[in-house]
Amino acid sequence: MPTPTSANRPERLEGNRVIIEDTLHAEHPVLASAFGLGRDAMTYAVGRGLYTVAAEFLAKCRQTLGYPPTLVTSPLAFVSDCSQIRDCDVWVFDGGEGTDDLAVIEDALARGARRVCFLTTEPGSFAAKTVAAIPGVATIVVPASSSLHSSVMAALLATLAALLIAASLQNGDPELDAAVRVFASKAAETRFSAAHLALVMGKIVKGKIGREAERCHLSLLVDPGLRAVSVVFRDCMEPTVITFISPDREAARQVSGETSFLLFSGFNTRHRFVESAGSRESIAYDYKDCGRLQTFLAILDAVVLVHAVSSEEHLARSCCEYPAFRAPLSGEDDLLSTVRRRGPAVRQKQAAHDRRDHPAFQDVVWPAAFDTFRDGLALEDIQAVVLDYDGTIIPPDDPETLPAAETIADIVRLLENGLTVAIATGRGPSLGDALRPLLPQSCWDDIIVGYYNGSYLKPLSVDISREPPAKTAEIQALVERLSRTPDLFKNFRPVDHGVQLTFERGDLVDPEAFRREFILSSFGVASPLKILCSGAWFDFVHIGASKKRVFDTVASRLPSGAGILCVGDNGNRAGNDHDLLGHPLGLSVGNVCDRPSAGWSLYGETCTGPAALHNILGSLQCVSPGRMRFV
Image (cartoon, rainbow, N blue to C red; front, side, top):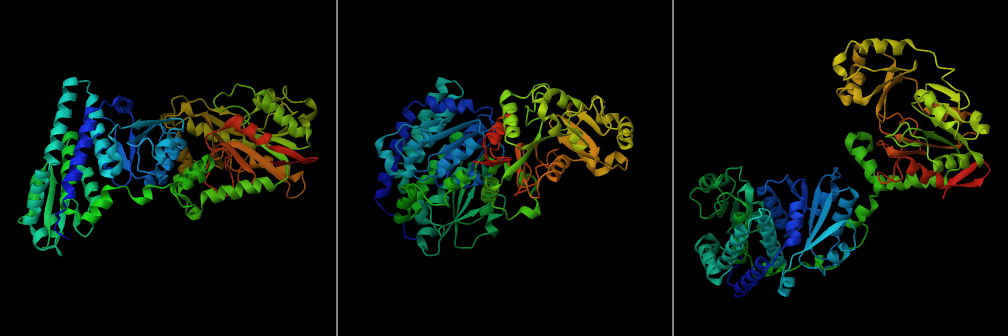
């Protein structure tokens, strides 16, 4: 490593100082407002390269303001994470001209982020101009002089200064605001002066770095509260020059004798770091409480050290925009293409897989699996349709409502084109009471209804309140057993349908614990029953009962291999539609399971319930009498 002597370095530092000064003298109302709007939300801060420093500094500012946690992550890590973020904010720092920022923004919007902020110093960049056209994204421009465009480092420093001011403004204290601006301005003026750079370089030259250039090394110890500093060194120094040492390890045992220690400490680490370095050569900086002002100072010091230590070639490459950032990326493997291949249906299905992480589905490429499933739908001649009722024909949250006129019209159109229509439901007589007045009486005998989750099959023409199923001993035994476990219930109000026992979830102390206890122990009584989830209810039915019995009955009346489309809303493993949707023509308009070849939703969570059913049935067109296809 050559001894750093370039005359260009003071000039670069002076340019950076001017940028900081310009930013500190500007007002930042939009940025300050965005800060305030995020005071009650967990936040993702997404940056790459040097802009990870800005993401870390945002996290520091939010932490010191007492806001909820901030997760700092890269674009790839963010897009690879499928966590639910509906109550979270996402901040994206403009990383240049690539498409990774757009990938993050599209992914954040698709995952339902509460608020998305895009922070840039270059409103004319490819990403900034594209983001400006995306609804639901707040673009925040940090004002700076035109010289800003020549350097990633300069843009970063302007961003940090703006974040510092915006954070201070949250206190609503003009005197504090003025004091912070003066403090930061003086810090930049002092540290970015030619005299200070010469002083730092002198310290380095006095140590082993100057005397044994080929073998010399820096071992960096950084207080955990100054993570942004580590990013500066990571991105701006040759890896052969610096070793990063965890502050939780005893440093002196981890390095060779040909090293000098560089210590960035705070109250909690200063003694530990000094003891760890022992008698080795060291350059020590202390940042007291490692708050946002001290972190700002630490970053400035790191920038000066980088200018003092890095080779001219590496420094120029680090502080200027990389060519890869200058042109939009293309091709199937870039991050934006990955996000766009992962539409709502794929996101929902993959999330179901992630929850279970079944060994059998480890090699599934979910976008490809969805394409295969959708292509298979298009090839089938549909001769029958089996529909769930609650959550599919009617909305899941209002059991008393009647089907919409357009839904009834869709069903009638299927019947008029010669298709067989059947209903599979967890309900009893109320379904027949609701549907008979809405559908032509001439078709009642032809519509099979599987009541009580397929436990009792009758034509729609039969009023099962007059022909109820016989009561079963197993159901009666379960009622008696549960009546002796009052700790499970807020209200013990079982609904005994003879072949099905129903509890409202709201009557249970812990619905999921209730379900698990039955699956694991049957509440201490051997029972040939199973539990099914349906919206707001838990249903106990005989282990042989299933809505698939409706499918099997319909299939027995059609030619072998006839296409039978099944639509339900509870397709997850515990749901009462799971069996019904377990084939390549099974579609969900609600939740889904993790099976790659069955039970998909075409629209994910963007369109559900009766609206999704209307879209599905509306896509069927008659190709011959009694046969329809998706178009």
